[in-house]
Image (cartoon, rainbow, N blue to C red; front, top):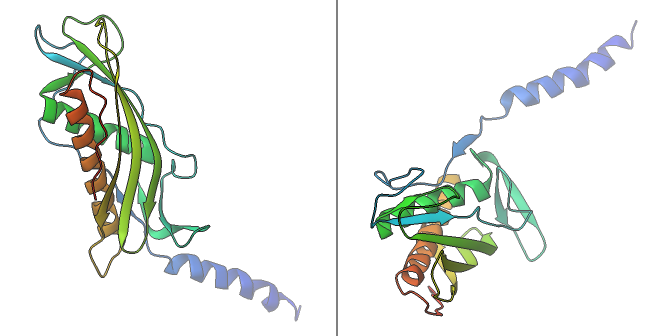
Length: 200
């Protein structure tokens, strides 16, 4: 009987620890308001088919991850993504590109309008306490056209506002995704060109 309190105390301590853990804020990548989407684009319009963006496996999570050094990464205890990062980047890029190029997002299938297929691979998306750096390559293909695919690549960066925190990290990551969209839009607007877009 005298040993019962010793069994109860650790459980009580764990419950108290859980109760004191703050709720995580949930974030999403932004998308411009008014971007058009639909299964088909009108005659003469530009139809855009963005394939799901590819990210390294360790980044494709709902964790809000920052890099602490050469080998270690840390997931935030106070914030997370509302969707997998690859899904958020794809959704944000698609809406942004449609807005910039005055295009419609379309699904696979026959189109009444010119179809542009874009594939994006993110090779790095490293966030430290001061900077967000995104490195990516992309290919633009004009369906039913004899033009050669256009290829682009770039490294984009944004400073994280101080004193920092999850919201400033998310804002900097969104800024680098917007810069990536600029690079892809420039490649798409220059048919057949081999171009590299690099941001300091």
